[in-house]
Length: 352
Length: 181
Image (tube, rainbow over all chains, first blue to last red; front, side):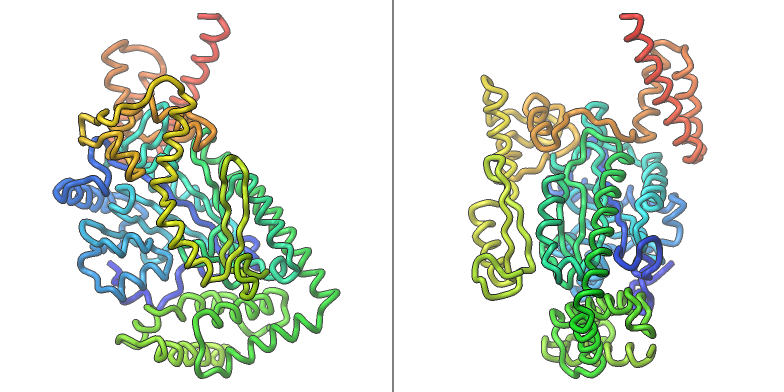
């Protein structure tokens, strides 16, 4: 069984920077909301009911093939840095960390599967894969869901599908998301047009870090908004169609930047690399912006000696709880800026 | 892109609001977004948004106003509670408030019939009742096999049987429609 302290020394499998279209697509993610029939939803449950869900979920996970080696973490047992650390690794939500009682999290050693117990719904099953691969993601989550449904009586109706705490999730209770890196569309000021078109097709856009709204470092997470009236495969097919078009637009924008503004682009990329390699104090905001440029440099073949996987890892490793886990103590904001700069310098020098 | 409010900082938050079926986009910097989100939470939490939708579907539905005292007999949540917190209390709430939830779901999703996957346990549950009621037919045989597969924890086989049952039921349904029965 894995331990939470092992995670800091590994790169989550979905961050490896591999898989289809991984020069533009960071990761593919699907989450399913599931509830146990005739048991109050977490926000409405008495302590006893909620505890029973934790126990039943744990037993079901132990019999699920993909979760054989998974860790089962109770939120009450974790300190604040550990909880924040799991949020930063995209394994659970802020909400899950904020109110820890009768909440748990199951994670596999590859970190490709994470299941929150007693978040908004009894189960929030999440599967993530590196690159643009919703088909594989669906295959994995579908199988896990089938197995768990053999052990837990799901709340389900023929008419309305999977019954969830919030009616906005009822139906398939599925959200499929793709995380994209779109620096060229941002630089050529086309991103608004793209995002507007997406919103009209009832997809939502979020930022890099979890369920918040902030889009930073040119990262955008696109997801389906409605969850009823179409089969899961159709919904995923729609997302794939939209993502394919965005990828095409980003590719065109990158070509345009290269042919029309080559010096400007090279200057920004190499300056970003220079700053990251040499800074001794750096904020998280600046880090994300510069890493985005470095990633673009690596993706278009300008920066040759830095692997995409390392850049991806730095996005996660430079966040507050990760820095504090690395240092093994609490750090003030100023201390973190120093530690962050140090980690980035070390990692980039190791590889180049 | 610059922030729509202060026109100084880079916009990092992109907000889509839908008011009266009109979509507006707002691009904000971190600082303005924080201010705006505090404002929004005060006047416009998610639960209020849902409550607004609830009221809207009530208007659509016309005549009947759900009495605030309508209550789920299983978990005790009242319709008024749902309006306030925007969350249902348990699976049985869906049956208790079915009349009001139907239009609401339609409003949110543009559809009010689920067509996606069905849990293995749900199909197996129906097995028992179906077997008791009729005790014949290809679908019932498959359902018995499905229950056996679940009992043996052979979930791939179970998933295959579930899909076969769905297919068989679909065929049966279209046949019935053809013959006008």
